[in-house]
Length: 193
Figure (cartoon, helix red, strand yellow):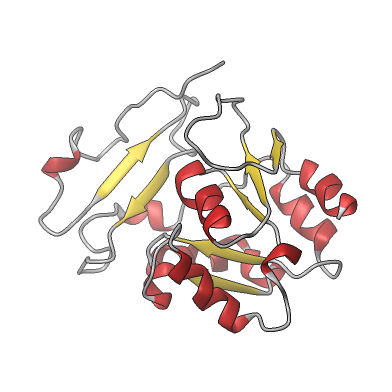
């Protein structure tokens, strides 16, 4: 099993405690040759053009996971597709627009706009309020985070698909209904339903 290797991102302080006051930025890279696979969680309290927390170049960085766009295209028209994210509103909206994913999705639910974070049931109750006529058991949540995506699905009684491209060991007490290594495997999960 390959375990992610933590390393700082160029231009960012090596220690999150050195970030500008009011910022909460945690970063990790899985050891790829460049920093295109950085994962960010940015606090909702930021100011200035990029909040002083995010280097401007990262606001324009868009990277698809292998097979992501093709999977979304294959599912378009077959099922409704939504993004649910704890990311910062400014960053997420901009990345969706620049990537063209906003045109492939039926909607986006961002914690900052909903006033609640994944994995809380409150977050998903607010999502459900916008998706009337669909029961949680008829949905799927696909995500790479056991602590926010998969636990959120558990909390809201949504069947879960853990995207685990590195084959990391399962941890915690979350229920994982399906585990995939490649995003196109979602098509098979949808076909089984």
